[in-house]
Amino acid sequence: MLMTVEELRKYITTDEMDQVLEAKLQALELSIQGYTNNDFKRHLTAEGEYPMDVKMGVVNLMKWELTNRDKVGVASETISRHSVTYFNMDAGNSVMGFPVSLLGFLKPYKRARFGRGVS
Image (cartoon, rainbow, N blue to C red; front, side):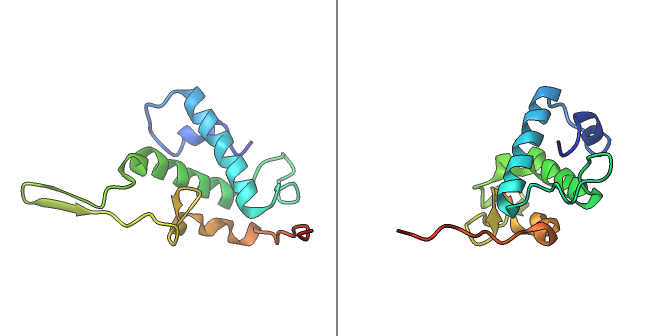
């Protein structure tokens, strides 16, 4: 597992239930393994933990998930004289539903994917 819910709670404050956070962490782990084509077995520490850069990257992804996911699709909002503009989440600047800028930590772990030839 990427990290435990208790470990995640050391870095973020949220009212989400532990079961929800655990499910999101498991989903992120599967998504990251699929995106990088890497099961991370060679990169795990002696204790079987993921490298710290991957863990902190996941913390940043979870922060984004919990604070910004509900704003995806909103281009801008204005209340009185206060205006906020969000970046566009299209295929060019998002991967796995997250901004590309948050996934830079995975670049060293990406492996080439070799497929079978088309018959």
